[in-house]
Length: 154
Image (cartoon, rainbow, N blue to C red; front, side):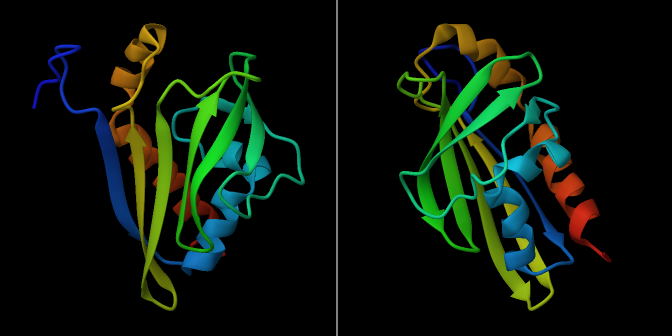
């Protein structure tokens, strides 16, 4: 479906796959920002200080990007071991409207369906639209695949 405001297609992109690890084990890598650069399939995250483990909606964690900018990530959804979502922003500013979400659904005790979503339906900053449009299911799948490589059979 084409977005009448931009002339582009859907503004929600996602990817899913089953990972051979418990939801809790996978969630620890996602909820700890210092671990995120090790599995980022967008190759956009440089580093985050330790000690920022997310615990609830309202938490904010800071992340340095590979291009040198810093982002504050405002946690807007949180269910321990199952779902986390955040809206990035420049430090001290309101989030411009895009969201990153992770959902984990246990299939068995050692197998989890992992879904990664990038939602830019509310993105208001026109300068960010090219980057948003460039985020594909393949980018999201790469993050899931890298997470899987860290937790499967280890």
